Image (cartoon, rainbow, N blue to C red; front, side, top):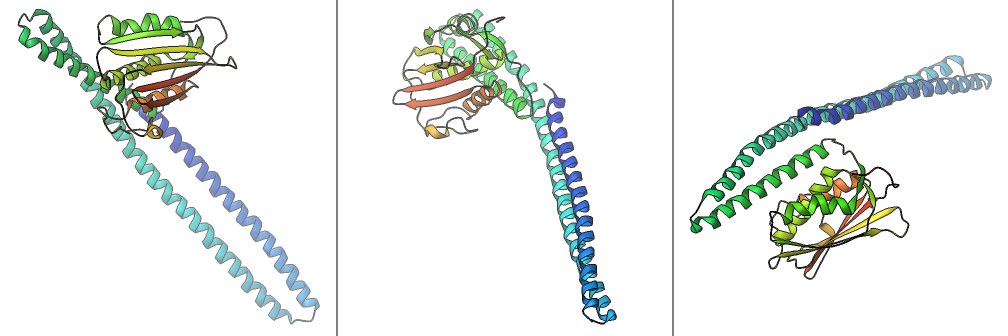
Length: 322
C-alpha cells in the first residue's frame, strides 16, 4: 500500500462531484431558458387579450416590458446564486480533499516506517532471550517482546484501517473454514503462545472470505481476549454452523472469562473504548468493516464474565477452496 492507494478514491469522488455539478448547472440553464420562453409566450398572450379588451397599446407594451425585465432579473439572479453557491462548495470540497489526501499519505508513510524498527526490536529481543542466562532478566525480556508484538499489531491494524478507509478492496475467495482455522489460525497461538486454550466445535463449510482479513479479525479477537481475561490461561470456545436457510455460515468466538465492561450498543464504533479498555478502540470497528467488505456481518455481545463475537459469512457453492 502506498500513497497512490489513498489518491485514487478521492480523485474519483472529486471527478464525480465535478460532473454532477456540471450537469446540475446545465440543467439549471436549460430550465431557465424553458421557463423564460414559457413566461414570454404567456405574457404575449395576456398582452394580446388586453389589447382586444381595449387597453391602449402603449400601456400594454409598457407592462409587458416591465414584466419581462422582472422575470429575467429575478430568475437570472436566482440561478446565478445557485451556481455561485455550488462553486463555493466545490472549492471547499476540493481544498479539504487535498488536505485529507496529504494527511492520509503522511499517515501511511509514517506507519510504514514504524514497522521496520518495531520488527527489528522484536527480533533483537528474541535473540537476547535465547542467549540470556540470567533468570532475573527473563521477565523484562518477556515484557519487551509483548510490548513489541502489541505495537506491531497496532501498526498493522492502523495500516489496514487506513487502506480500507482509503478505498482499498478485499479479494474474497472460497475458504474451507474448519480446515482454515485449524491449520492457519490456531497454530499461530498454540505453538508460541501458551496463554490461549481453544475449544473447537466447527461444522465444515465453504465460505466466501479474504484470508488476510480473516486472519486480522481473529487476531484482534484473540488479542482482546488476552487483554481482558480474568485468569490464565485464556479460554476461547469457537463454534460454527450453517444457518437455517443454508445461505450463511455463523461463527461464534466466545471468550468465557472476560472482564470487559462498557456499552454493548457502542461496540464496533470507531475509537469506542470500554470503561476498562486497554486498546485504541480500532479492533472491533476494523472487524465489522472487514466483514461488511466480505458481504458478511459482525455482532458483539458482552455479558457477565463473557464476550461473544458472532461472525456471519456468505456460503459458497461446493468447489475449489483454500
